[in-house]
Image 1 (cartoon, rainbow, N blue to C red):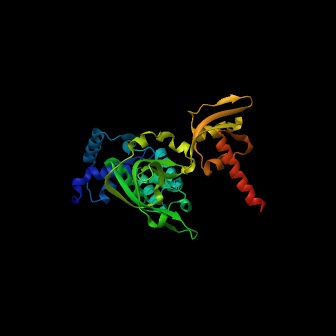
Image 2: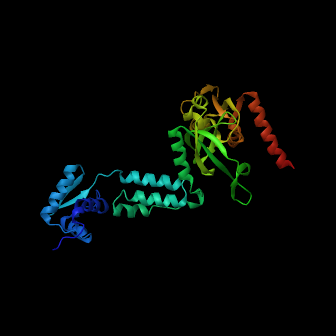
Image 3: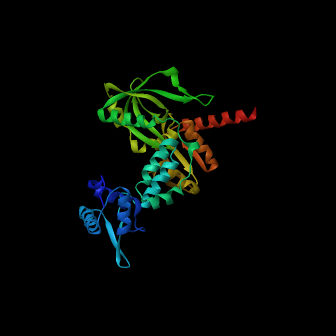
Length: 329
């Protein structure tokens, strides 16, 4: 039989076939391998195929040989990701609001290529759509890339910042004012991606939702505010800032019942010190005293109390009184 025009690519096609059509539960016979190669216009004899398979094994590919009666059958069983890992990554992509619906679909298609075709079919049956919770800003990936590049190159960035209006449209904040900051980190918090940066005008470390940034441009000026950033413990940054809303940083003492120990540890981490006081427990944590933090306290009801400082207790009482006023009218 005449050899095909892709004959020189035989080893590459053979490896691709093993990746696509075999796995730890699916083996291919020599006949099946030669037939699949022939579909790609590659003609191969049995003896040559044995040598090609040995060559791939010698190179380091984990091609397992089993017996099916008297003939050998082959499978590529070791991959960059195990099937359970691919499934887990797909679950993360589906659940992530940060990824738009289109980008989620594109990434899932790419991830399925890490498995065999038979495995990919099984995965597809377990893929569900959560598009109603996805972001709409497709430029978010370019934003992330620009921020990473600015940090690597030690440069400031300029951008516009979005907000929702009553028509549920995204419009520029501050009439399209250009924000100029020095980016230092990207932080994942409460299903959102934030850029932590030094505000050059206000001399503050602030954070910005990456999906609400648009027209991100790397500035020619070097970053400033390094000392301010170094004072922040980024690993604990998101614990202090509830929902990444701003506020006054305070060291707050909380008193709570035993049933809330898990809730408090989940919120502030395992490094906090908890003291037992009779039938209740206390801990002191640094938080931004925003409405979001006060709302979290309110959601836990009478099982938790702000013990100190007094100004935060007063702030909490003021918020509750404001709520009561709305409902008593």
